[in-house]
Length: 318
Image 1 (cartoon, rainbow, N blue to C red):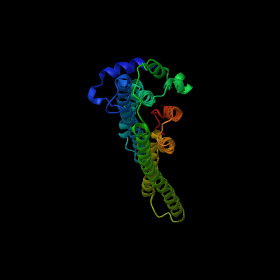
Image 2 (tube, rainbow, N blue to C red; image 1 turned 60 degrees about the horizontal axis):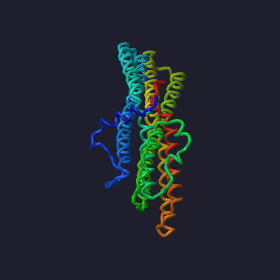
Image 3 (cartoon, helix red, strand yellow; image 1 turned 90 degrees about the horizontal axis):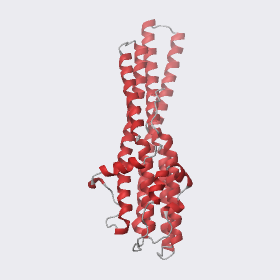
Image 4 (cartoon, rainbow, N blue to C red; image 1 turned 120 degrees about the vertical axis):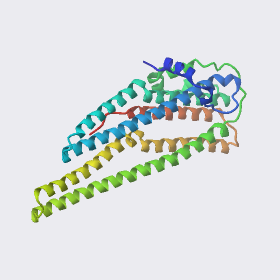
């Protein structure tokens, strides 16, 4: 089922204070675009936050189940199996809730709509005759038909005063994406550091285990009970690292940090390229340059959508 009717219903529930706007003073002929954009943007952000919370739920619960089961198995704390079962039911409930509410799907498709509307807005401001529906990639027309339907239904017949968009759109988006690129790089560096630490501790624990077993083989000075406790501790240490790896996979892995870095870099460079073209052309904004930029924006938006579709929460507890 497509989300067109759902979006139009949810649009009516948004308070005016929650709506975002493409710019402060919206020309009257473009108010329809801005109203739709404000709703799509706000709803996409809201569902993005819910999606991220769903990822956190799975990311925390999955390794907790694996870790507690390890304690149950190695330390023979039999009551922990009850906690494991309870957490499994909580995990299944969280997973099913996220699927039924379609937060991930709404986040992506509402964002596709919002960015397409923003692009159409600035095409209109720039005086371009080309519409987003004329240059929209086939994948979106086919895979998210309802977005194409809404865009096709826009009334673009009213004349709009032509204005320069180099600062209003191009430089503004360039600065946004370069800033977001820096934030994404720091986020990824943090994740990479955690992964290196986990790998280092895991390898070290294996070497300690090897050294312990070699020592016990050559000098069996410890009784079986003490040796068993040490082995259990080493297994728990390795299991803890595995649980952290599950967390990283379920949360940071689903956030696709490497892709996010690359996406913001490409978009920043795209807007920078057009900004330079306009500057070199003595700030004359040629329609073909604006249309080319709009087309590339829609392609990048499609690439982002296709990639992010793979990042639904899943029940990975192994």
